Image (cartoon, rainbow, N blue to C red; front, side, top):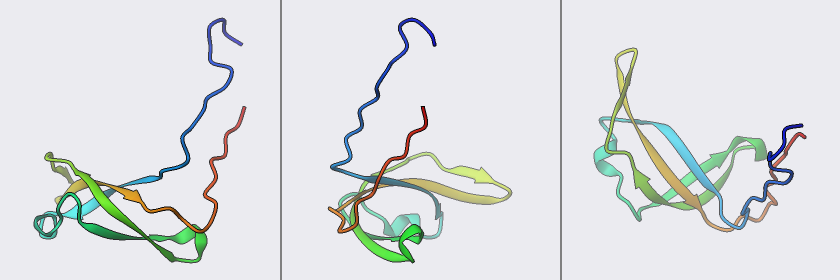
Length: 88
């Protein structure tokens, strides 16, 4: 253990945000801040979760010839209890 290292880390789990990095350049023009979004949560058998676009990165990422953008989506309150798992 290191002196001055945090002992406990508190997280605000009342809101969940999802960051996606795969919005292609052909589709990014149809995405707007404030727009409703649907996210499929594969950990819950592909259930859909609604949310809103909170931010769109103005900088594209080019990887292996694909140009994509990062979009941040804030999820609406969810019926399942999403949990954060920490290892100490």
